[in-house]
Image (tube, rainbow, N blue to C red; front, side, top):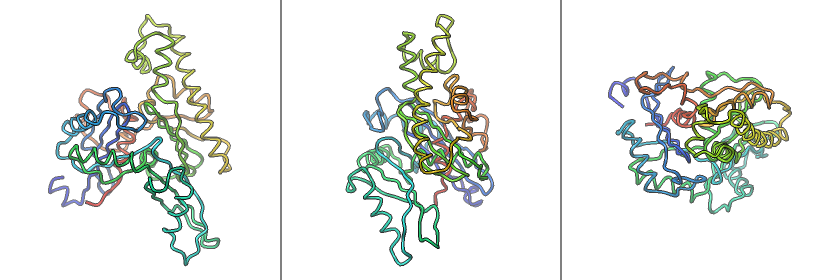
Length: 355
């Protein structure tokens, strides 16, 4: 950050989204009434580098991150990262806490009892969402992360010459982008934020503008790719291209459509299961809107299928429409064709961190 930015009181935050298929970076500069995207980039990872949130090829991941940092902004040191999948859980709970009790101590103790992980192997955190002074009930969002998995990423980043200053959750980063796109105004009703990654999808429910809960779905982009491979007898690279709408004349278009719809139905079944959990705790029978993010948001026909299947409005996340940036930042790439892929990275970078 240059001296003029410091004089204006600007701060910058870097979001580094480490997925199973890509790593994405976004450096956002915060001003009083606007956000500026100063640097961004996407780099594909060699197959098998990260699997199910576990680092399988440590050296390969360090090399990829270092290359991306140097391409975007070599001065970057501090980054915000996020986690999802088997190594992390989040849930919303209500506790009754007497004003004379130590709220933090009681919340963390209760959280430790509820976690499916061994309490000695996790890091717990929480945020108080609301308080009821009459009943002394406190609504709390709990997060538990496996130490071993979280520490493996932290150690790797230090070895890459970086300093992780925030370890967040994918779902919260997606929520940050959603609120940015709403201009801070709460939308009434139930909104489902569906982040479709390569190996994992996650569903986040927001009710009347307030975060409610998150559930993971095992059906993701890789399931679509393997289904098309199997049904059409083509390579993973060709299947990926087909999912983006590039279908060679030699392929059976009807079979392509059937393969995508079959995979989308599997994804929808996971969405139904996640929504059944949501309905069990809220008096809501319908989803008013679905917002798609992640690389899977660009699967040909997926948005239309979900719109019809779930009888609701579906749109793609587009955080780039709500941050300012220089057109040359993306070179020859159309920003609108990758905006949803940058949702988590930009959501992480929206965190204002004291500097």
